[in-house]
Length: 191
Ligand SMILES: Nc1ncnc2c1ncn2[C@@H]1O[C@H](COP(=O)(O)OP(=O)(O)OP(=O)(O)O)[C@@H](O)[C@H]1O
Image 1 (cartoon, rainbow, N blue to C red):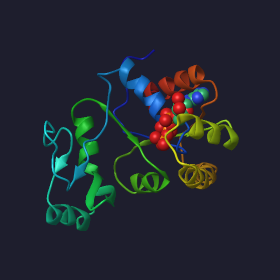
Image 2: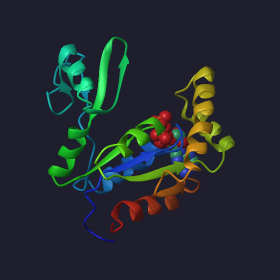
Image 3: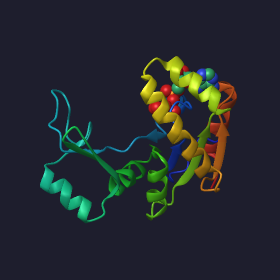
């Protein structure tokens, strides 16, 4: 196994419930020095113990809105009255610290990363079938029936998007060990 991961950011996408968090958790545990997540911006107030620049970049609304106007964000959204966003610079900073930035984002995020100079590599994690995906979402025990339905509808769109060839690699997460092995090969692959 090569010891040095490429410093090009890696975008991992795929339907909710395909296993992205499961696989990434294992990757970060096995290779803690090689990979990092970007630090997001937020307008919510820090909770006790949350350090600026580590948990989040904490900014006020005018500052966040200025960054929106400057096109600084790959993606941003408002949840319960607060803005959250991932800036291009936050992704570059991970690389500047010698780690490969991993972005776990949806298809809109994939499109927006493609429109930046980040020169990312794109991985799509697919479920073996939509039936299996539904079973995993239900089995995870975190989703209401409405939420499962919403995620399944979105999953069909994500799968159709993957068929357009937008990604460098598609891994089917059927057998977890096999999918993990494929993930490790992809992330350490020479460019
Ligand atoms: N290969 C696999 N075989 C069986 N079950 C799996 C496999 N991979 C993941 N799972 C299970 O499927 C469920 C969904 O996985 P996970 O939460 O990692 O998905 P996710 O893609 O990160 O979803 P989200 O985008 O909603 O965060 C979890 O309960 C996980 O344990």
